[in-house]
Amino acid sequence: MNLTELGEFVRSRRDRVRPADVGLVAGPRRRVPGLRRDEVAMLAGASTDYYIEIERGGAQPSEQMLASLARALRLTADERDHLYRLAGRPLPSPGGSSAHLHPAMFDLLERLAGTPAFVCTDLQVMLVQNRLADALFGPIVPATGPGASFIHQWFTGDPRARSLYPEEDHEHHSRTFVADLRAAVGRRGRRDRESAQLIGELELRSEEFARLWAERDVAVRRTDRKRVLHPSLGILHLNCLNLLSEDGRQRLTWFTPVAGTDTAEKLELLAVVGTQDLRAEA
Image (cartoon, rainbow, N blue to C red; front, side):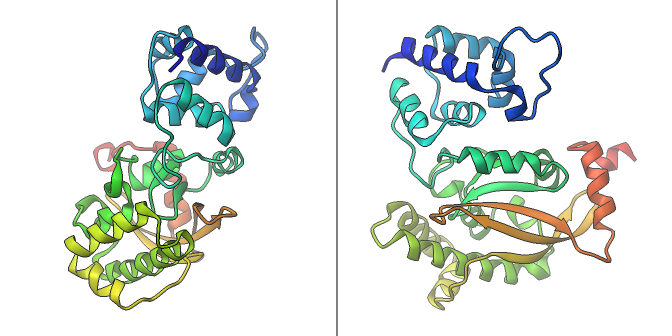
């Protein structure tokens, strides 16, 4: 662990990131070539004072904060690993919630401001989502281990997961999740501990999952059509599209309105009000 060097390294990476690279307006009176400290703090979800302490070498960031800093500063995989080592933290697993998010995929996500979009792992662990996805699906709930997977939440009775879709669509989504998961497990191989732990726990805790898993259906989810149930706007009819990384470990998922429905208008309204409760506003 070398917190002094950690602060110097973070500051050097901050200096090289231009505001336009992260969707910020530079402004005419800018004094620094890269990002300001408060901008990095905002992008990483930290207070400015805490981020300043990191640069001063006076704080040891958590694994979650390191992952956020790596994404905010658009670090490469090697730079991300160096950041963790300087902080004295173990390197995160390739498929966990702190998995390295490729800067190019992150940039593409941020350019999809007018449509809900997120990046997740092949085990359905959410890594990051844009503002419109946050308003549509709710914020990402921090979790570790198998519980970080949306598939785990879906099959273990998490009411938040099931409430996203009408009940009559649940069987379809269950089958889609399981078939896609089997494809992911095949890519990872039998020795992958993360997927083995997830499957083992789901087989013990969910009769539905055990039944579907035994059927051995396999299909990579590339496109789908979903009905998403929003608490204020009602049902939104959405085309679900996926862009997979080269190794298949991550995917960028975005949603477009189905033609002939009122979903486009609902998304426009959602983009304006964000996460406000529309029922309370009414």
